[in-house]
Image (cartoon, rainbow, N blue to C red; front, side):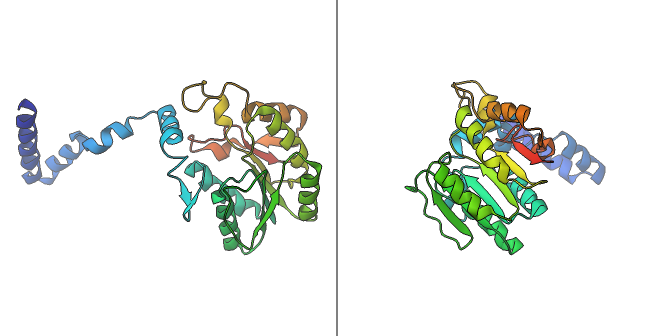
Length: 249
């Protein structure tokens, strides 16, 4: 009952301020409480938001044109900026799953009226998208057969790579070593999901083994022609810390 009476008084105070001159209405806007429905959401810390997104959104509530897309939308926005800046002839996507991001890249290339997406995945049990800019290469990204096929498709073309395959350090490092040669100068090799190396095991994101970020750190020691473009992490809430690798030489 006490809460009900307080709520009633609050409404009366609000009405009083609304009827007062403009100056007092401005004072009211300064001191009024945030709407209850959003108060708790906006108190969420960055770490809490990332865990929330990972646990509640990315696996079953994130779509591109109706196709499931396991992406942080803030990273997806950065991708379109990079694709516009680089204007690649080829986007290599290592790991496609259902193909939401593959279709997203194809649609961005439609806007640029150029290019193709090479989708590399070891199986196609959940992949169903079709688009005239998508070229499907099925097999282990480490196999010489797949690498050779991709090499043929990339000959004489400017290339951008997005890695969303196996996230274990050893595999990511192997893919970096095998595919970095295709990346054009001033283009990017984007390594996704290094965030798992920043969080602790069991907290909703962290992994017990070393992942993409650890692979990137080792790769950079041996490949000075690539640097981390931290400006691509400006929205802070990225799944790809240290993962926007720009080729500068």
